[in-house]
Length: 430
Image 1 (spheres, rainbow, N blue to C red):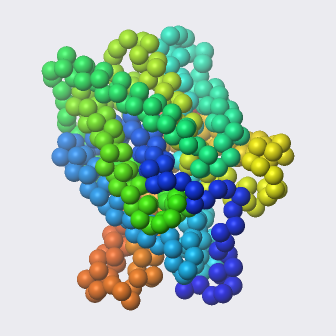
Image 2: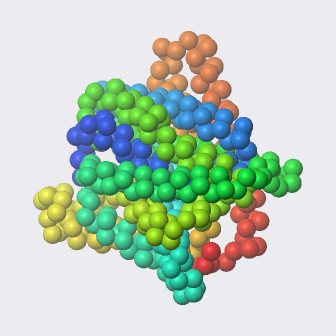
Image 3: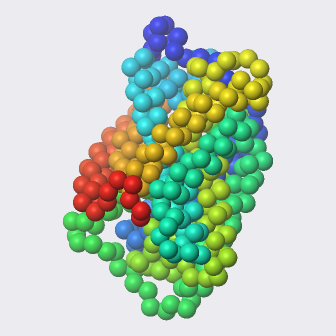
């Protein structure tokens, strides 16, 4: 356990609202992350490298393992007689000062890359909408990314903290259902009219090894936020019981749209499925435009969720601490600080629109450790006196197995970056 000096790092002081949300609102926060516009890429990034058997088993197995790991983490929210509302606070309480800093660094890099990926995704949705009407090459991807970053910043200025999303979670679900339903229906129609489909896993034997590892990393990314304690901080007591309800909602009803669009896209187009499913479907221009715009709008809301730990840190450490969230000085603070943070995000997104390669590396070096390695090891540290030998062996197996998988995924991601660096350039119009 940490010593008394280390425990000074742990504080419930926060400029954001906590302990106020019902479990179903938190369930919708989790579901918004799962059914973000990233789902439009899983047919190509998960099913194509793994095939029907590997992809289907992988999605189900990854869901089960992710639910288990997140449930372990949720049960650690209240230890030592207090709630730990941040991942780094929990790690600091269990391990000490150094692990507090390392956990915060891993989480920051992970969420920064996810936020940058969301801005790229929003830019791609905007460009896809434009190309439907005018394919003249005037509106390039970097311009669309810059516009997306601006809209995300406007949204961040108006939503002071995670709990304030409320009605926006309803809009997010609505937007998700629009693009998922359109992608599903148009894929179904295309699949019926295209009888011959090729489900052969592409690539040479050696290339398949690396793409398989990369697909496994994508499976993990699909279900996990890397910020569960921060989300759990918003939930009403009893915090563990309510968080488990929210997790069951996420991994049952909340994941059905993901399965539907992923399987349908792969069934319809096989190994030729695009990495952005709406680029594969055929249908009326206005329908595809509505799907792309819905993906854009949902991405703006989803980004706010994954940016909230950084916003909470900045607001708590540097904010005035007085006045309501919409007092003029607090609004101006958000404009300056969040605007600056998202400007950096947007610049990186425009420079590196092939960020998926880097995100694979980030996932290997931070998502795996945060979600699986640390969750199991922290549970061991806290509960070891109450666990049987078999249970202890099981948790150590998880720690060792996911550490090895993390290393393998990092090697695969580095190889992908090296291969793609010969093709892409900064500010590429992909």
